[in-house]
Length: 139
Ligand code: TYD
Image (tube, rainbow, N blue to C red; front, top):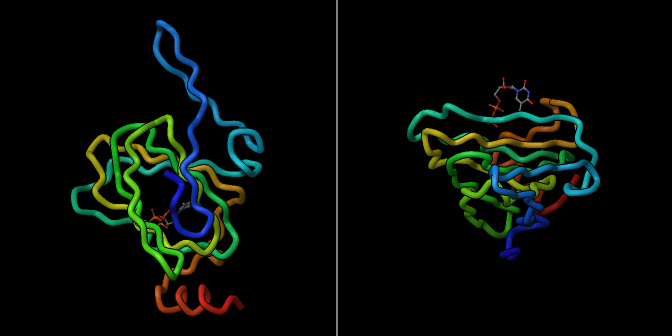
């Protein structure tokens, strides 16, 4: 389950279930290995769309498909691995320097992402050739 590229891990979240249904809570530095600075979510994704197509220089993230399903392609410059996210009780850690592409979104998919820093365009590597160069020999 955890045989993923460069520090990516699937984490089983603790689910509080009772006869009313289920509840998942994610606390910074407890259930996720960083302090949470930002939450965003992707939803209403049109058919055949691929999102992401970037890596981050320093950002740590955690992704959960809280509804529906999508596929996350992970690439650390050496290995590529596709992970299906379709379980709200599973969270995928996305460390820096992992190229990721999200595709195959179900129409009901809500992909929630927690991040350890505010949005910063300068942290993005959007050019795959540049990513590969940095992955092989970090600046
Ligand atoms: P984009 O990077 O294209 O999303 P994805 O990685 O899913 O393909 O982001 C879409 C727009 O949203 C872009 O203009 C940047 C903006 N944005 C923010 O303002 N804050 C955020 O936290 C994120 C993730 C994106």
